[in-house]
Amino acid sequence: MRRFIPERRTRLPGRVFGIVIFSVILLALVYAGTSLLSGRTDAEQAQALQTGLWQSIIHCYCVEGAYPESLDYLKEHYNISYDEDRFFVDYQPMGSNMTPDVTVIVRDPDA
Image (cartoon, rainbow, N blue to C red; front, side, top):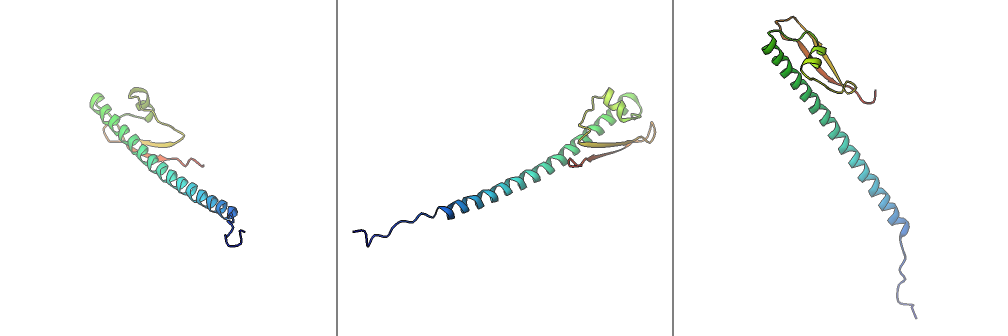
């Protein structure tokens, strides 16, 4: 009796393959997005650290009449703190009456 009614064939392997491909593409997009966002966040944090350092250096000069002689002095007296595993700060004093050279570098987390 069911001669003229076509049987439904399930395409389960095709659907599973499509779902797997879709999932892989979605995971790749999420990973790329988080990597891009993480890199941008590191740069913004480095900029914020450098701004905070300069504000403390200028504050020290205004209050004490001389630029700080070391980065440790800023840490102790002006509450500068940062993640030393994540950022490298190069502080080169030029003298008590000359602006120091400050460089903030983001360290590679994979290294």
